[in-house]
Image (cartoon, rainbow, N blue to C red; front, side, top):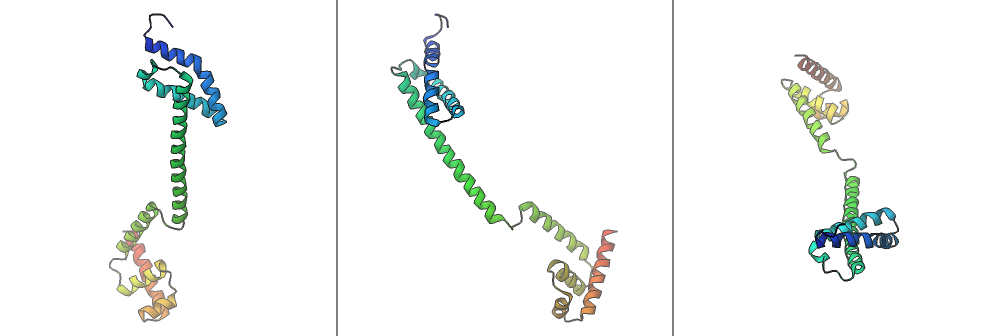
Length: 172
């Protein structure tokens, strides 16, 4: 650094050169991780650079650096707690939602039902009801016959009519 440089730049340069190694080692002992210590040492100097006005009046640089670093450690711990809480809630939501359809699945189901409704238009009411009961509600032909008050043979006839009608609707 040249003698003609501004006092603020000189103060920053001096602070970094004389105390970065000490701060890194102090943080490494505290955090027990050299990668986190390096990140936090860098964050500490970035934070200090953000408050340039205070650099000129520093009497105890190591106390200033350690106080700033402690505050960053606390900030990081708070962020980590928030992140952990969010991840726990997300995991609980996934657990609760298991077995439920996603919004995309619901949309696809609604679109399929809309297509089925369109294809069944013009079909006799009992044939349409037999189709819905059999293919969507998964009732047996005997159950459908009881519900519609017809014979199981008539239910089979309704189902055949519905399938032929749907085939024709698709091929139109």
